[in-house]
Image (cartoon, rainbow, N blue to C red):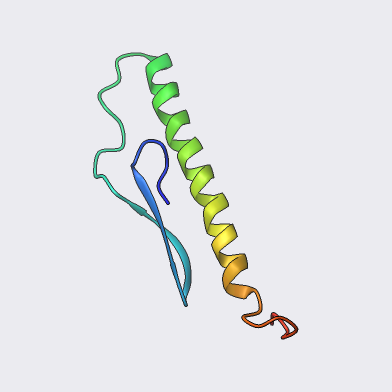
Length: 72
């Protein structure tokens, strides 16, 4: 899963979930406060989407593999 900016990627496995940065540069050059706020807000929105995906994947990993088996 990646966000709309294609800056982050969610990875998961037996050890849990994590977010990786796809790019070293997360914003372009910003020249005023509004431009800075917009660039950072877009990154925050992407990270929020990654957090939702991470939580979904962790819940899936905790779920019972077979119906009727305990999840823990």
